[in-house]
Image 1 (cartoon, rainbow, N blue to C red):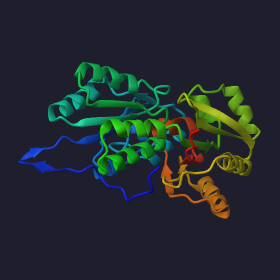
Image 2 (tube, rainbow, N blue to C red):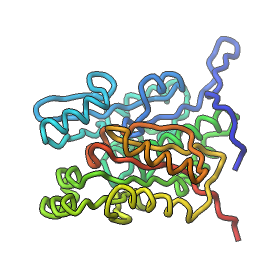
Image 3 (cartoon, helix red, strand yellow):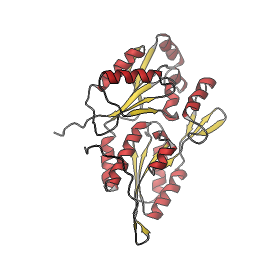
Image 4 (spheres, one colour):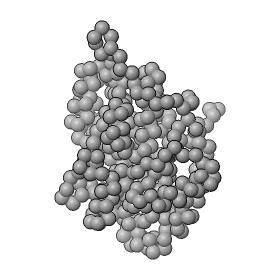
Length: 304
């Protein structure tokens, strides 16, 4: 893999007054980019609407992340997300086609949402070969790592097919591990039964979750208490070496106390991390407050 380089956006050049076709990167709201970062990096961004009770929201427009978690705690409701329609993608694809731009779309796991299917339908309607769809088989900031790398490669002058090939390989190595503080929100979302959630909370069980190879939420362990949860996550990470060419992010949902304790353990073990990021509604609705975890890239195994 290339050495880490300073981020650069894809070039914008002009020749004889005509714009040269560009490679653009598209993400949906499940990537958890802030709208400010979307603008800074010149990403194409597809929002996802969130319904809580009778109210509809778009994160970053009329709903901030801390407010989202506060509403969940106060109301006891489970939010419903509306996947983007094929038309939302088609409008973007037709514009790219008219301009001759190429689009690399890195989308929420098809096992978690119909977002990828909406984009696939829109691509068939647009009838344009310059659209590349990548099923991330993931969510939240794992998509950010993929999209940032695609932007880096585009800035270095690589073509869209080569970038897509690199991202398809990289997505197999991006890992997320999270320790939940409560089972209540998995119960609200129908992931586990209410009785099992109540018993688990009474026993102070802290489930460790990840996204498996099919892009589904999977439980990798259940620990008695937060401290054992922290040690479990560290042990999982130490099984494989990190790829230092990529960032390592600690992640949290609502409330930073558990995440701060986790970061202290990382420092004690001289385990470097790049920064702390807050998980948005797409995954946050299932994990609840005081969840913490980490996102990293495993080092590529040498080919035989």
